[in-house]
Each structure stands twice: as structure tokens, then as C-alpha cells.
Image 1 (spheres, rainbow, N blue to C red):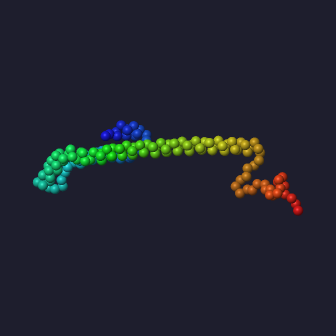
Image 2: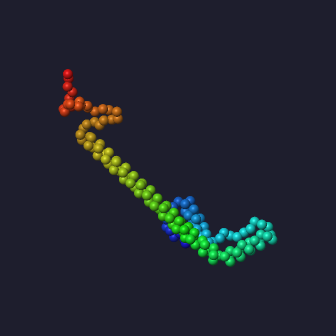
Image 3: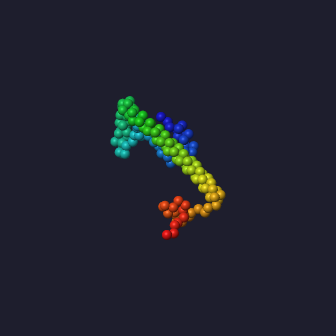
Length: 148
């Protein structure tokens, strides 16, 4: 499997270089059927003999290894695709949220302008913080107070 076409398309402006490098590293090790390079830390003559034995074992049993790890490979492949899709979905949600925020700020600005225009048309000063407007008594419909 190769995510290279989808990674190339998505790397145009969406995926930052650090995440792109990580996805490419994950893609490189996605297939568990491919073994790591065979080596040995032991000195000659034991080291080269072990390397030869490991290579012979791997070549002899590679069909069985492939069969055993096929499901893991398919899982890894699908998981990489899901990660890429989730990343794109998160990015699109972030973009939509930003666009909605800009739209709401514009609407709020226009509403504030309209409110200021209405207030200036009415000619009444608006109440500031902590100011109290005219009060009426509970039984008075005209808003005047009664002297006793």
C-alpha cells in the first residue's frame, strides 16, 4: 500500500512537515511482513554464521510469515488511512469554526452599529454600567410617585 498520492495531495497546505514526516515513517513500517535487516553483534566466526542462519530461516519460512501477518498488514494500512482522514476532518472543523467565528464577529459589529444608530435616532442616553434608570412603584401605572 502506498499513501504517497494521498499524502502528496494533503501536504499541499494541510499537513505540517512534522506530521507528514511521521506519517511517512509509519507508512515505511506499515508492512510487518517485511523484516528488519538481519545482523549480529557477535564477532566472527559466530556472527556471520548466525546471519547466514537467520537469512536461511527467513527465506524458508517467509510464505508462512506472510500468511500470519497479512491481517496485521491490512489493519495497519487501514489505520493509516483513518489517521489521515481524521486529520483532514479535524482541519476542516477548525476551518469551519474559524469561518463561523469571523461571520459572528461581523454580525455583532453590524448589530452594534445598528443599535448605535437607533439610540442616536431616539435621542435617549443609554445606561452605563452601574446606573439605574427611572423607577416606578408597584401600584402606579403612570410612573409617578405619590406623596402621602
